[in-house]
Length: 140
Image (cartoon, rainbow, N blue to C red; front, side, top):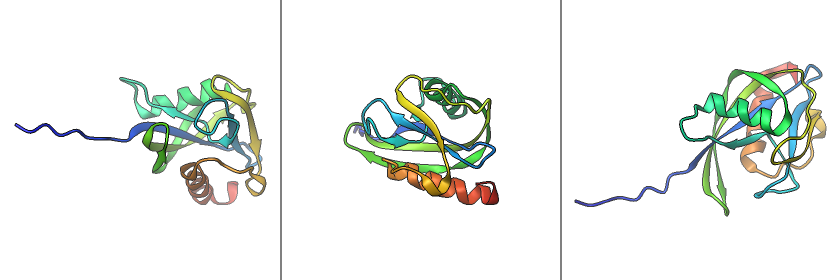
């Protein structure tokens, strides 16, 4: 019998959150990869955790914002030197009490207008933002 090793991507989630002013929530990463750079709230799915649970947990841990899932934006991949390929499941999140505070793994959390976003470190996050804006039309 032949054994096959599958080098599968690591499953993760990303949160696309915008406030009533149409501003998009970003975090300044406190850990590698991309430490000190701007990104969407995101993180790995833990054992026995659903992606929907993971995205809301990561949002709370990184920004202290509670939210609910509005819809799936899409599924993306990101090649990284540190982890290999990462598979990102991106959700559009409705936030409650949308006043971010930095949390674990973050140096800062802030809302930005879509026209004045800082440089986003990950290509997959740039694609998620583009698709999130397109799917939300005139709200952003």
